[in-house]
Every structure is written in structure tokens, then in C-alpha cells.
Image 1 (cartoon, helix red, strand yellow):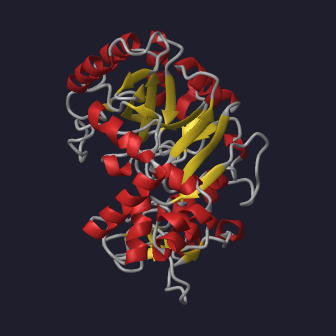
Image 2 (cartoon, one colour):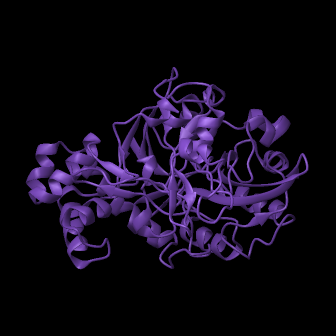
Length: 415
């Protein structure tokens, strides 16, 4: 069976998250997007865990995969850890996946020793990444820890602000228990393939959504004989049945390039290096983006593809594409109307990007169809994201403005 899985989302109990993000809302949003396996999100929050148990209890049949309103769920959360390593403070976010409600309750009991689980859906824990793995495996060896958005500057394993240079540095003698990382919105698998040290880790892509509209902006596609927690973990570990990932164009991510948001300074990594990573306006240190960080750690040129690499497909959220085609804001009634028409025609958003171009042209106006086809074929440009600002999609063929990147350029290969 074909499974589209989004394994990292947040609930209404997390900061800056929509009140619709609970099991009921997530199941409704998943159907519109075409997601068949949805993360519960935030199981560490006591109030939300009670809701999860009320909505999912008894629906798994012993498989570790639960059901609600026709959508299947996996128990998930994200935690923030902060600890000192080699005299410096490190801050990392990790996704936890649990095989059952019973195991999840035990996880929460243990993690409550390290932070206030009620304070946020994504709690901050005073524990090292290595010690966290030890605590989890004391409960069950089936619990999965996956480093979240692995390249984000402030809160990730490889982040330029508070990360490290290797998985072994982050996890010490527990590194062998990590089998996957989440690439995040500002990088894609091709960028991660530049590091031979990451070949042994499966590359996952998830939405990290804080609202229903952001569900599935990245996702994972599996082909499994049956959907169980064990079969999913096996597919991730071995990559057998791991078909592909749906990816943001990394230029769309809000930490792809270097820069300073307040100073409106956007720089390529090589431009930043020429300026010694100092903002030319305020003379403070730039926020070093994901592309720069990947290039610093890479031992291969862009374009190398490891053996057994899982394929990927770039997509752009459909509301963004329609918005750019119509030259209206994403929240405008016109964009909402055209989006609804496409969902009614195809059934869900992922089906739009899997459909032949001829079928897309039958389903909508030429203007919108042309935009969708351009995205599918990669014939687009970006003003890349930087320092917390999302990238801007450019659909027209006019002369590129300063700072735009043609998707067909392999700029990393020239770094």
C-alpha cells in the first residue's frame, strides 16, 4: 500500500500553533493534503496526551499505528534539549516516535525529570542528546529519535549557532542508535548527499507544521505490505519500501542563504565569506544559513548521489503557486476558491503534483496550470530565504532581480 507520511507536526499546545491542531483537526487537514499517516505531535504535553488517549485509545489493534476519522496516526513529539559540550552551550531539537500509548506514558514520566512538560508542546529539557537517547532506550529500544531540521542555525544538530560538526560529537557513544535525520525546509537530500558521513542515515522530510495549511509541505512516501510501527521503522532503516520524499525547494526555506533580516541583507555563502561573515550594514555577525553550513562540512561536490539514496521530488505548496499565478495574497478569497476547485477535482493536494500535465490543464485555468507545470518541471526562480525570511517564488521569465536563483543553477557545486 502507498503511504504518504508526515511525521513531525505540532499541536495547539505548542507556541505559535493554530487552535485547530489537535487529532480531529489534523485528521481533517490530512485528508485535504493527501496524507495517510499523520504525526500526533506534542505527546509530551500532559493535557494533549490525555486528548490523544481519548481520541486514539484502542484503535491500533496492536500495530502501534492508530486511527481517527479515516486517517492513521503515529505517536510523535519534538523536544528541545540544551546542554554543555566542550565548554559551549548546545541546543538541539529532536523528533521522538513511540510504538504505543503505554510506552509514551513511560517516556513522559522519565522526561518530566528534565523540564516542565506543561510549559510548551515542544518542551525544553536540561539533558544532553546522548543522555536523552539512553533514557529513551531504558524504556524501549523501539523508540526512535530523529534529529529535527538538522541544519537550522539555532536549534539543530548541525546548526551554525549551537550545533556540532558530526553525529558522533552530538550523540557520543549513543550515535549508533540514530538511523535517520530530518533534512528540514532549507536543505534537500542533494545537499545532504555532499557529506559522506551522512550516507548511513536515512533522510526524512516532514512539515513541522504549526497550522493545518502547512501540513505536508514536506512528506515521505512508502510502499508497504502492511502499515505497522515496526514495518515503518524497518522501511526507514533499510530504505526498502521507502519510495521518495516530497521536498520544499530549499531556496524557499527561511534559512537557506546568509544574511540579516533587520538590515535586509541577503548574501550567498561566498559573498558572506568575502565579508568575513559580518553584516555590511550593522557590522554584527551574519546569520549563517544552511547552504553555507553544508558547504563548510561537505567532502563531495554537489551532484554526487550515494548508493541506495532515496529519490526526492520538489514541490511548492499549492496555495503559494496559485497566489503567484493570480498575483494575489495566499489568504485571498480568489486563491481559496481556486484551491478548493483543484482539491475537488483531484481529491487532495499531493494528487495535483502527481497528475500528468495534460490533466492539470483540464482542471484549472491556463494561468494556474502553467504555474503548476513550471513548478513540477523546475522552471522557476527564487529569492532565497534567509535569517527567518521565507524565500519568494518567481514564476515569470523576466530578467532576474538581484539575489534570485535559477533552480537549474548548481551554485553549490561552484562553492
